[in-house]
Length: 410
Image (spheres, rainbow, N blue to C red):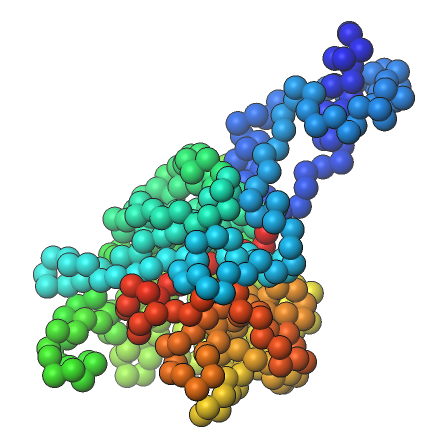
């Protein structure tokens, strides 16, 4: 073996011995499927070329596989803000967390005098660092590390789940399923996906026979609150695409009302070992193992409200709570996840994600304005300081100037 070949082989072995970097496990799984190969440990090369290796480690490439740099990784600033952009055009991030995608929703005509809540997505292009528009997908979630997204096509329910490379913009592969799927979400480590199954599209709205918004016109649409199309969930391994489906019948309360929203997707717990569903009635959440068997809530999640997106802090010692402001002020509470007791009150109308163990990303309202004048901000526990991250939302609910964020760790 020539010296150059020995160096290259030794360097590859050393890199593999150190293991993969933390971050986008799902993205690495997808990439590994493309280039998986048999490892060969060349002990003699390591011994012979130890001195040579030290002199070539700084060389950027020796002809091997180079992991491309992602835009979310090259922007290493603690806070990346664009307070004049709404909707955002360029990467927004705070601490460990970044805005991976966002959606703008509109109601489009559908058969039987109904409407479909259709989303247009803006995904972070990891080559340019800008958010790029696409109308291909109805549902999107992004894995930790922000290299891979899991996507569903517009016609729901669908019987295939896509894994999208955010660097190339191409579908890496499809995971076929037998049950119709209309919701998908990654596990906290990016190794699994929970896919919620529905018998019909949960984003369909029906015309009301009364004036919902009090504008004097009978032209309002809403979901049927006496109906649920949800049938159960899959838990699927991202690497193999294998998993199982569990049927979960929807229950009704004592008045005959369904206990969940028309769209009520399953999600993973913080440990990634269970899935849960939010409820519109007490106890507020219901937990299941991967076989669909109902189980008790984890001790540190018993007091979490499913509608508060931030949930547990990275170290698990704090939990995001609900609104704690007044008639003219905004604030949210931080609670003890084990007891539900309020520990802190912080700025922010709605807590969305943790930037680290002491800071959060939130929606907040501009002082002396209405409830719809919101922007993304970073708030700090124990401080009144608010750092604007985006511009203000425009319009009211349902307006094209309003967008819904998706966050993940960068």
